Structure formats: C-alpha cells, structure tokens
Length: 390
Image (cartoon, rainbow, N blue to C red):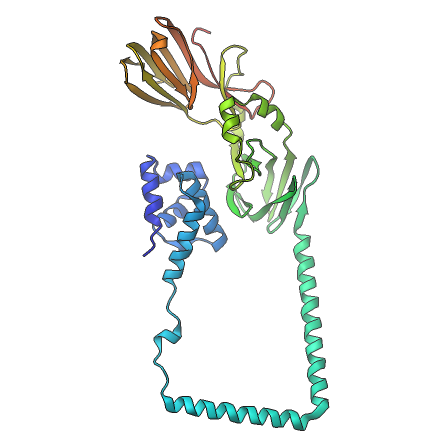
C-alpha cells in the first residue's frame, strides 16, 4: 500500500507543529488537513481542491509537492476495483462458437440490408450525419463563447468591479498569462491561483508573486461579499523595484534563480495588522531583512571564547547564559528580542540566518531586535537591530 498520510503526519510532527498551527498558517481548514493525514479523501469537494491542498500542505511541511501528488495518484489507482473481466470466468468454447456464428449472421444480414436499400438509404445516412456534425459544431461554438465570457483580462493599473462564481481573471506578466479563478462566494471568498485553492476573510487581502522573483505583482482586496457576488479591488504593485533595492544581499541571493520555478507565492494579510501599533523604522540601526509578511525572529548563537549573554524574548523574563567555546544556543521570538552581551567578539550571532556583527573583543553591548513598519508603505516591514537605549 502506497500510504501518503503518514508522510504528512510525520513531517508535521517533526516540525513541532500541531494541526491547529498548520491550519492557521496555511489557511486550510483543519478537517482537510486531517483528511490528508488520515487518507480520508472522500471529504474533499473535488479533485482540484484535493490536489491543491496536497501541494500547499506539502510545500508548507518542506515535502516535494510533485512527489506527494504522484504518490496520491498511485494510491488512487491501487484503491480502484479490479476490472470486471478479471472477476468473471472465461466463457466456454461452445459459447465462443455460438457468438462467432451469430456475428456471421449479423454481417450477412447487414450487407443484404444495405444492398436492398440502395442509394436512397446511403443519402439519408449522409444527411443525418452532416446534420449531427453541424449540431455538435454549433454546440461547441456556443460552449466556447460561454467560457470566453467568464474570462476577464486584467490589463489596467487598478480596477474595482464585481465578480461572480466561475469568473477567471487573467493577469499578463512577461510572456505568460496567470489566472485567478473565483471558486465560491459565501462568508469567505474561495479562489484559486493557478489551480491552488485559498480562502479569504472579509478583513483580509492578498498579495501575489506570480513568477516567484521575490517581488509582489498583484494585490487583490475584497470590498464587499454577498448575494453570490464579490466586489474586488485589483491593483498592480509597482513597489517591487523599491523592495528589491531594500532587500539584504542574503535575500537577493535567495531569490536569484527561483523565478518561474514552483507555484506562485501568495501572502494573505489581515487588515488589523496594518493598524497595529508597530513603530516606524528608525533612521539608525542595521536592517537585517525586509518583507511584506512578518515572520518569527530567530537567533542562533555559537561561542568561540567565554562570553556572557542575557536575552529577553518578547515580554518574558530575562534569561542568562555563560557561553564557552563550542556552545550553541537557539532562540525564537514573535515581536521583540532584547540582548545584553559581554565580550561581544566572543560569539557568532545570526538573526533570521543573517550574520550580524555587534561588537569587539571585551566590549559590552545592549541591543534590541524587532519588526518595524516602513515609513511610507504600511504593508512593508523591516527587521532591525539597534542599540537598546535608543
């Protein structure tokens, strides 16, 4: 049995996340995540949704999305019943001879019928065939016209309009056209980006990097939901060039070569995050990373010589460590990380995987690491390390 559920469950367990954590971070309902882990695929509303959720969940857990989809298709084939021909007994020879004789009689009777019917019958058959082909052609043209009516190209800088279920928004970028499909309109907006499903609350909006070059291409914001219609704001994002300049060298290296590989990068943002009391980025300090999505603050420390380290995570209590050569420490914070270090040159420090130099040998320093909001762009954040007393 080609089981895939345990692969997802083991990967999630190793990452230290609960199903609730995964549901909150992936925006996929808990019942669907459990359906994948328990191989209960009958609960999904359709094959497209299932494949999309498989890819999303696999990417979130660090699994290969294509490999997981392949394993699912193998599993599906194994679960299908054997063909009926394999379950029935082979016919007896007498039945075989009887069928051959019956087929011979039918062939002779058919040839005799066409011979007696003559040209009149042939013309009637040809007329009906042409009529049927014409009807099928007309039906295909009508269906094609109806399908084209649901395709809505977006070529403006910004547009605000109503959409209904089944509408497909085409977004041209370079020599490609990317699509957003409106799947459902209820309390939430259900939509798919290149066949990958998402769900959006009324107090959320989404920014999409279609070609995965590290820069957002399109903003989609629901203004009103109800009565089978959704009013959306679609806006091209031209802040991408500025963001590229503000990215650290490590971020630029990370995005280099990824363009066009993998599914689009979709970031869902809650409106209340934009109005939360996050201070504006200071003029001083070292800017570690810039992002349109605040992530956890991770710190990894390695000692080279004896050094003192005191740290406070968010609003918690201060902890203290005496690091010696070879000692290692990993710390995670959500909003703020405060540091007190004696003999700063005696440790190697990385914040969100970016090496940070904070002082010289024997020097005592006090630093604070936290997220700040950009002065001009409310949805852009910067992770900065600065002097504590400031």
